Length: 175
Figure 1 (cartoon, rainbow, N blue to C red):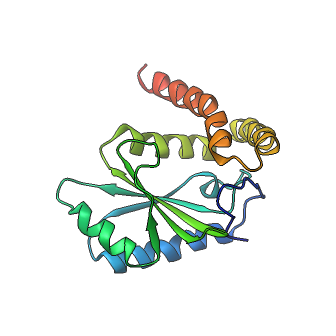
Figure 2 (figure 1 turned 30 degrees about the horizontal axis):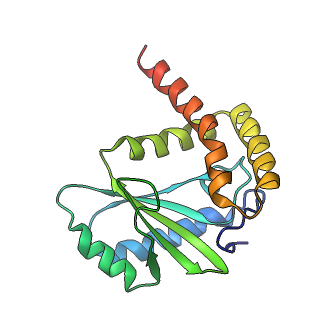
């Protein structure tokens, strides 16, 4: 299953097809943009142990030599809706799919930013630590039950857990 109505929170078990969907979309984006660029699968659909909303999260890492406005234009002309920053500075969000069936969230950010680093750090930590996945799944289930039609509150409810993991990993790396 892939796709979810905008604003709805519905979690399902990991689907192997999500990785294939990411590869398919990455291939499409590389052909579409015609530049060498980093495109990475993030979010819960990128972690086999996690429950997830069936929407593929992807980040594109910008470097100084990339003409961002041209990328935004190309994406907007090819089935991606430009949602602007959506409350997160230094990120441009594009979504794919209708209001009734969002399938992809494309986050465009500076590859040298803390945000890029944190997306990958959190994903990789969860891939390597099953106990953290279990704890995160419990939190996500609780929040999905509490906020089934409020994705913003659902997302906000995960922030402390995410920050706790990021702080833990960064402190260990700094030792």
